[in-house]
Length: 481
Image (cartoon, rainbow, N blue to C red; front, side, top):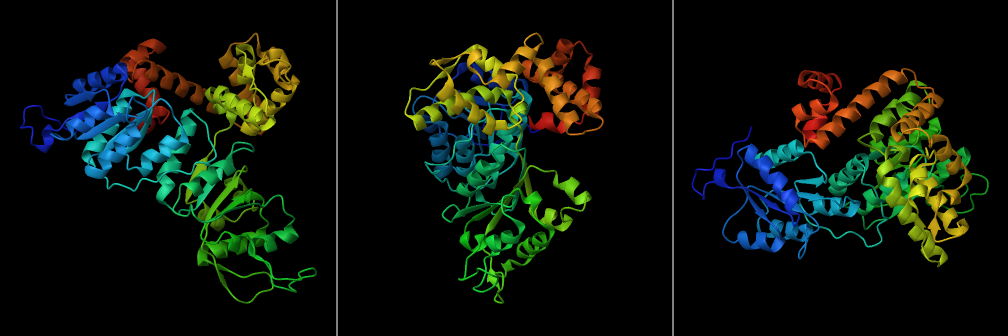
């Protein structure tokens, strides 16, 4: 454990305290108690102004700052600290978990981004790591005002936001996986807009939507007379994306011969137009996406393993909407507002009964399906308040069938039905483990990370909880939070 001593002179590095800035007294209190329990010195502040004044006479070892506060925001404080004291690690925390604050935090040089509510042990681990490491500041970049909005407070979406922030200074190839309708192109566009290539073009192509005979020309272009109907030279998507990003959607459906050509581009950085003999250099970043299991397609001989390795430099998994139940309400409100703007009408609101019904729906079409439902409701619902009876029939029927069952049983039954439909074997063993993981996560969140108390709430002994955490491989996850 990293030691923080109280009794050394104030000028010594070991005496520097952890500074906490948050206008919410309860958050300050929780962190103060946790730091005191670990014998780590601390100072607390209620505003960015107080911190900046204190920095004139002292420096923290680590600064932990909220984002939204009266006066200057935590992001403004981050920028000021990194300009004058770039060596001070800053941990940014917020209850308003969104892509913009995550990206701005990392681009502004934050050590880490900590969504609220957080696990106390995780917060302490971050503070210890921040105190023992030194980070060089990065240049803050103001995001584009027209960046597509990606909403998500679920833990799985926070991981996506964090990854976009981490990748904001990288040109690495990214493979995005997820079911249809989860927003893979939105994430690809966000990766581009928050990258060093943001000033270049973003060019997207759905490889499954273009006939095989035309796909090669679409990607690489063709020379005049290369085939019947090629009356002029044509630039392909690689040339159109020069200096920017090429998004290859549904890469799992690419024909085998084109997989070979794509592999050569990724390996050599050059390609030939159809019918051409002069090599063209490819200065593009590749972001690929698929709803398919590429590892399975490799085993089936449908996708090249060497191409998968080239694409799989960084892999991002987008969760299906059924794994993000807490995001359904904010997403629905967002889509209702947007539909109302498009149709120039007053936005409608969802009654609790309608929201409850939406939360029990499986959403096989994911976020795109929810968006379509909200547009349908804007047009079809008779009043300004949307009740359960106003919902589309498939949503109402699901809600009626699940009305008599507890919510967790509905969610479990829904996941089991979808998994069996996909043909997964051994599903009982997997779901049993996931159920126990969910119990442990929730109990630890409820107790602020205290394992003895969590075990008591679950009706287990501490040794049982420890054993299950080890058997389920949760130690690393719990250390990270």
